[in-house]
Length: 388
Image: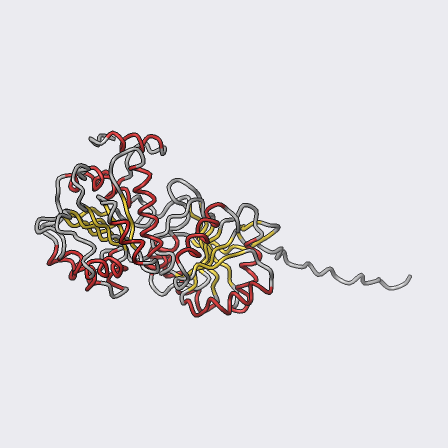
């Protein structure tokens, strides 16, 4: 690494990084040159560091104003970005602060008194602070919109626009997403000036096994129970709608399954604790919705489980990307009914991956065994010949 701030290079080495990942190698130069940049790359390819390190590099620590604002759609993603930023500024002089909803406003206003150089927050809370004239961004020269497609899908475009309009006249915008949809590009076009486009093609890791278990809706909780007993499992299961969480909780509690649920409506403290315990391995199964887990980076997830098959292939890719991070191996397991299987096979064809039918056998997830189907040989009856 050749950043001018020594603490960035020191952290890079200390954290065990070697060569930049492709998205980082392509994004660093235009970002350091001050260009607007759009970054389109699949989940798990290193997008956060792709924009974060050049951002930190360009901060003037002698200026006490907020110079960078990173906007993210969920509280979990905000906290995750802050954690990564703090790892790379631990031995430096760049100050970081985060701002999210569900936390007492006064406490977050107090954080602004410490004069952070870089802030990361959810759109609603940042706008709230701007309206109260507590957050001043007139010297902010860089704006990053992470998971920008989700900002659009969640109806947060007006808040994002207000944040951008309160920054310095001459600013740099970074748009980051796994998928740059037509809607997103149309919305962002007025804000971008001849942006450099960094695109990493969707790639299917050879380390991932894509499999399914053919089942019924009623039997799916039992499969989660059995999966939770697999040796060294760390499974992240997705359902499509949070209204399905309470009945599923009832089923799993009856079966005394060791699990937790990450619910987007729960308080910040509870959700942070849930994630901390899962990362530590205190329980083997975490159940969530796609929105609640958007952008989460959890190491060593062995299995991503599609308890409900998502409607779109992009959601399938987002969720599946939570396993096999870096060079690790992982399994993407879809629990499907007969009706779902056609939909899943369509995803597999589009991704160019082989689907395997799996089963849980003797405490492990394996390819479904072929039953012994040797033909039964009917032996002719022992016909006695005529008595002599």
